[in-house]
Image (tube, rainbow, N blue to C red; front, side, top):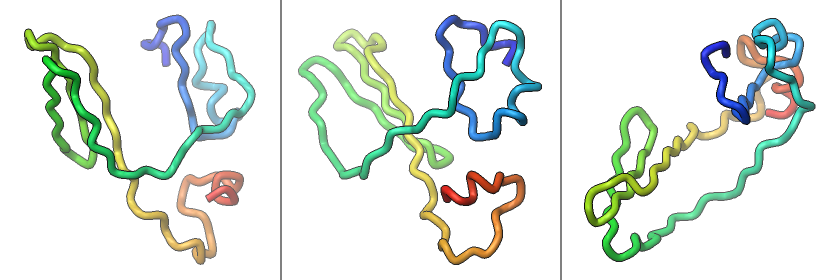
Length: 106
């Protein structure tokens, strides 16, 4: 975390405070636990504005999208990864290196 020093940088970590605290450098702060927002995904085909081009590709399970202006300049970019299907909830014990709290939420 020492190399990341931009003001306003937020790191969302999936570990207990006691695990993360020793790694936090001076100047960083640990905020109270928060929640990620999510929604069900549905296929869409948004239109690229006139004069812009859209290029997309998938590699290693990560889909990237690049939008360029009519002159080929960068306009916007996005990345997305679709997780593997959720494992069966009938598992009797948590996977290795998983906290009990994360296991209960899983």
